[in-house]
Length: 315
Image (tube, rainbow, N blue to C red; front, side, top):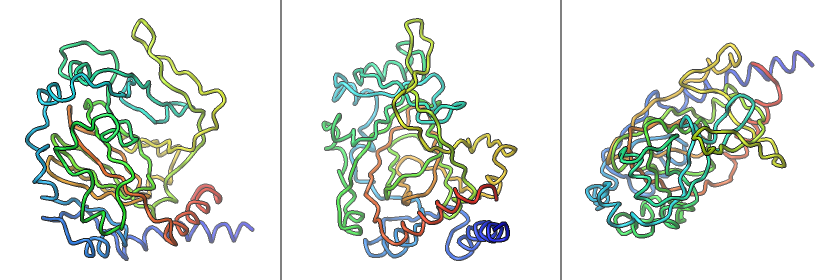
């Protein structure tokens, strides 16, 4: 039995290396223009490889229109849902908790007042609600861009499942996770810093179960964590790639992250199931398009890899 487990562990250690040698790039490549739908499917979606695309949305009015004064004029009075945390980490591990942000309803202008320091706001504020909030909460802005990416929609034969609007402070961080979406992430202003890890590195990515809890801000401005008592525990990645605890999670040292910066006017294709961690410049504005991934044989293979990684223990 021990010999069999050792053989499986060796396979799991060797698998990511073989994947990198066969098809993965050492850096995230740039494309100077969007490809044809067929080319994009063959070269990027099918192989599950990220890339940064320039000139993909240079025709959007949002690139020159979107600014705090414009937002105040067009959607300043609209009520929006904003994530508020004491430290910028929402949907992240803190100690033995998976901590979610306080969801606060405020006008768009109130959020801008805080971000422009016209009004004091205790905590870190991030407009990040991922339920197609651009379409649901801010439809007045949809005339400034396309509500889907035509060549991506043709490549996949479907429209996006969600179109999300992002605006936040530099302290707001998205912790390491993966999504079941083909993601096109468009930066309108500012920049986003991504740490990307391919699905084939799953054996090196630790997961644990955490008690879910939600931040709540008290009247004196301090935050408390309120447990979601009846909720099931949440599987999440406890490693912060900016400060990895390699003594506790030594296998993470074997992962080989890719680092890239997506600047204004650039689009990142983030393939489904890639692990990613995101930071941003203050006031960065972005829109992303989530297209449902195909739950095909590749997904089945990944599920097998995930099951084996969680079964055999340390590598």
